[in-house]
Image 1 (cartoon, rainbow, N blue to C red):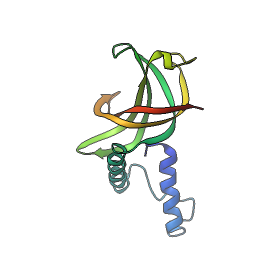
Image 2: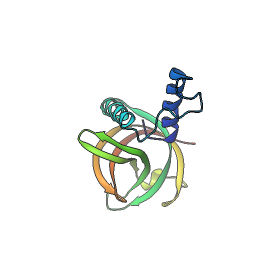
Image 3: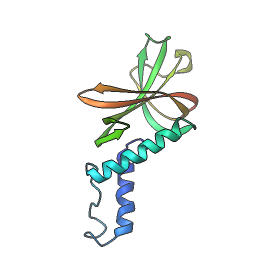
Image 4: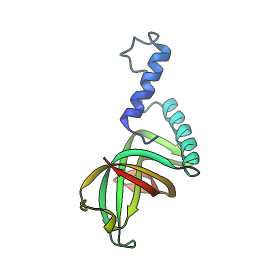
Length: 152
């Protein structure tokens, strides 16, 4: 679960299929992303996914922003931030953003430049988790150790 709007729409679609005409037909919005029940279930789901992700490889595609990070071993940080529709609980922390990142040495970049973006699929393990304040929102940062990266 990466918090994308597509994932929230999928939850709505599942609910519509289950409750088809009970709440105004197929166009009715059954699940509001900011509904307390939805946020509780998303929080539970995310915590389960996170526990699994620290034990197994994760694979997902994203648009990654390339950031210069010369302070840490001359590596570039590839980052993706998603603002969530509401606050979800990760352990005891309430977060409104999810930031996924991984690091590569500059020689691994090929033709990419700092400040640009690239679409790529990442295969990797979560190696670090932290919570930070970012633009007035509480954010969960997950840093991945990449095993493979496929530029698309």
